[in-house]
Structure formats: structure tokens, C-alpha cells
Length: 136
Image 1 (cartoon, one colour):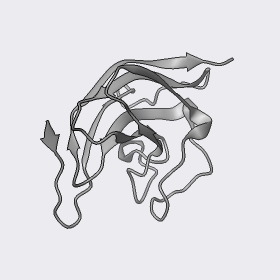
Image 2 (cartoon, one colour):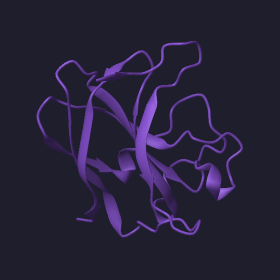
Image 3 (cartoon, helix red, strand yellow):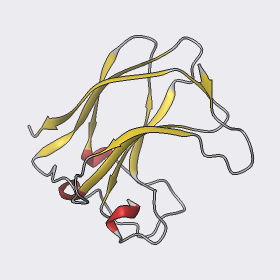
């Protein structure tokens, strides 16, 4: 088990990956969202934020002036493996910061995904089988 920082200005920890290769965003417009399997250890915080960075929020795209406020959703995990499905349409930027602040995620220009645990939290996070969800 690990613990995130509790100092003034601490933001937590991220676990994730980039989609792009050679600085080209990934076009996921033919998909509706992302699924993954996850669980947490018995003494872990259960709340994580799943986020997708797109052309408007990821620094490498060269558009944002205040970057890293990716589109996300808070998810409560359990101690048992479960599948979670997150639709692109459910994802929102955190309030109060980020520039630009477009109305929705751009699935045709994705840069990265990550799972974030906030500050002052003990965590034991397990993630598996991350994949795109086909449109219905």
C-alpha cells in the first residue's frame, strides 16, 4: 500500500498511458467510451478519477494555456474485480480551472488516459483490460 502526499498544494498520484505515437493524437471517434477492470486493496481509498486527455487539455497538443484538466469521472471501486464502463459523454472537466474549457471531450483527438488518486489517501489500486467500447 502506498500513500499520496498531504503537503500544501499536493495533488495525488496518476497511473496511465499515452495513446499517441510520434506526437499524433489517437482517433477514437468510432467508439462510445472505455471499459476496464479494477479493484482496490482492503485498506485503500475507493474513489479514483478516470480521465482522458484530449487535444484541448494535454500539453503535448500545444493548444492549452492551463493544461492537465482532462475530462474525467469519479468512480468508486470495490475490493473485488469488477468491470467499469465509462462513456465519453459522461466525462467532464473539473470546475474552476483549465484553459481552454470546451463543452465536451474530443474523442477524435485523444492523447492519454489516467487514473488519479487524490492527496492524503492510502491506495492499493489494480487495473486490467483497458479497452475501447464499440458504439451501440
